Image 1 (cartoon, rainbow, N blue to C red):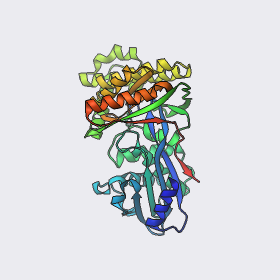
Image 2: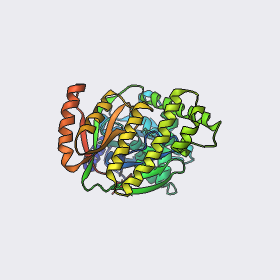
Image 3: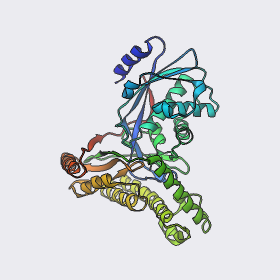
Image 4: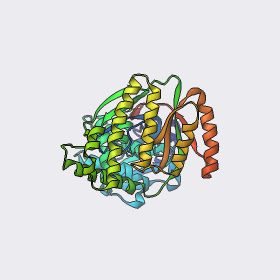
Length: 389
Ligand code: GLA
């Protein structure tokens, strides 16, 4: 990939000077969904697919962007004086947002850049292509401008800040954190309240992680996401009138049950229920994995799906079809929606000898029920963002 990207870079921008290359992965979350902005735990891992980038500093303040995924758009020009979001800037709003966030943090970017990317995360699949592009941009800026004091965790936070404040999506920290901090063959058990984290080896000698792409993305995803976030916050405010908690992640199931009537609105009550139970499920699931109780882990994944479907209401018909089909297949240890929801992907843990059957049966029945094909990726867990040599 790097070779093709370099050839294209030379063709589009010319081959002279110090051209550097970087990679930042996408992620899949195993369990702990919609808990990251509720002070709870998440358990994502970085993938081996993601976004590749090449960059070179310029003598002037111009920014030139080119994506091999959108080659029809050609070179998109901007400048360091123009770091403001705009509809017509399209995908370049993500790298521009990160440049803006660097400057907000006091890191003056002293020259423009030529930037070229290629991503192999399927578009709109909910596997965090935008977070990977943000973390890629951060990794690139840190290196190009020699800003050594910034840690990978800082780059995750800067990515989230730009997504929240430049791109208007009020996301939590999970996606950027996974892309920046991922580790091969491990999932990251992250407490989003403190940013304390631990790498948990995902040893599945008899099973594989299979992602199934529904190939649907329902509209208004980011406004529905922001609504969920507001509903959770309303629930928390009501609870704070009767119990001393900072986030929903501070509550056990028992505490929630004892105080839930303080939440006035029944919808907000359901949202909070999900956030509390999902956080506790995530803690239990990580323990189960450590104890090699993979079946137990799978059951918690299934329960996570039910809660996201019924209480948090972020699933959709196509995703429920995929999960229902998966649950019926022998050798499926667990299956659930992954990521923000309203379409996108499911994640399943499937016994090695059941994977072919899984893909064949779900592939056929999904097509019959929905009218278009699903896509399957048997994935490996990779490392976080980095400079490539
Ligand atoms: C999106 C957001 C994350 C997280 C998930 C749901 O991926 O970017 O911060 O909230 O949804 O778990």
